[in-house]
Amino acid sequence: MKDNPWFTPGWVGAYLVCFFLAFLYFLEPLINHRKHSFDIPNAANTARGTFPVGEALSVISAGNFSGTKLSNQETLRTLLLKLGRPEGKLLVNFWATWCDPCIEEIPSLGTLSEQLRTRSKSSAPLVVTISVDEKSQSVLDFQKKEGKPLPFLVLHDPDGAFSKQLGITKFPETYLIDSEGKTIQKWIGPQDWLSLEILQFLKKSCT
Image (tube, rainbow, N blue to C red; front, side, top):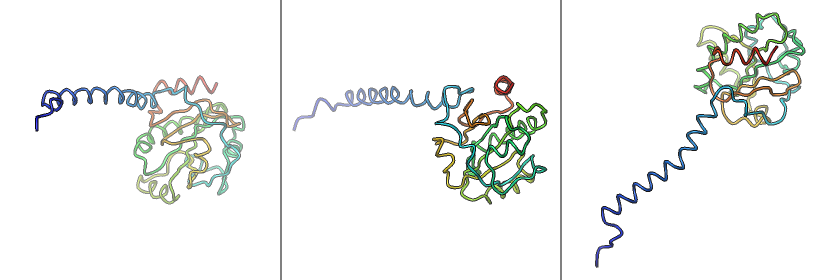
C-alpha cells in the first residue's frame, strides 16, 4: 500500500498550526468577554427586572447595625425604614463563604460599610450582603474564624430563590439599588470597594 501524501510529517505540522490558530481565534472573544465582565464600572450590566424589596429574608448577622432592633426576618424595604433611611439606597452584595473571590473583597467592602454607616446624609447607601450558603451556620463559623463579626448586615438566601429572580449566575455580584428596588448599577466579580473610581461613582450616584 502506498503512503498517503496527505499525512506526511509536513502536512501534519501544517494541520496542527492551522488548528491552533483557529482555536485562538475562537478563544479570544471568550477571554475578552470574561475580562470585560469584571471591568469597573459595569454600567452596561443591569439587573433583570426590579429587586423584590418586599420579600423577606432571614437575618444571619446585624454586623455594624447590632444596635438596631431587627426581626429574624427582614425585607430590604423594612431595613431602610429601621435604619432611618426610608428613601435611601442600598449596596446589596451576593456572596458565599465557599467563594474565594467573595472573601477577597470582604476587607474593602467592610471598610466601605463602616464609612457609609457613619455618614449623616440619608442619601449615602448602606451595605447589605446576602449569603447564598446552604446553611447560615457557615457564615457564623466564618465569623468565628475571623475572630470578629462581619462589618455589615448579612441576610440569608439558602436555596438561591432570591438571587435567581435577578438572574444571578456568578458570585460575588453587587447592586446599587434605590428604595423602590430599581437598579442603579451592577458590578460582577470582586471589587476594590475603596478604589477612587468606585468611591466617586457612589458619591455621584447618591447625592
